[in-house]
Image 1: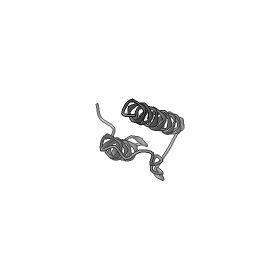
Image 2: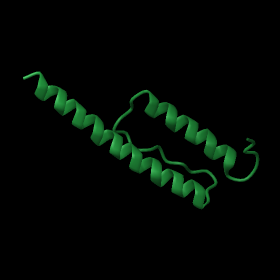
Image 3: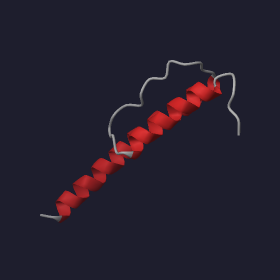
Amino acid sequence: MSASGGVGEPFLNHLVAVLSIYELGAYPAPVPRYDGPHDWHTETILRSLSAIVKRLSVAEETVKSLKAAESW
């Protein structure tokens, strides 16, 4: 799939960097700001990614709390 031209390539580069950050476990850091070309696709993806990161952070904290309660 080629993403040449338009908003594709800069946004894909940003998305790869963001996913790499979260893969390393950088929670609950907010999604880094994207200042490149955008359209409704990029806005929708960034909004969804922010919601997923928030849910992931809550889930990780819940698991951490449950594990701490088990160790009592």
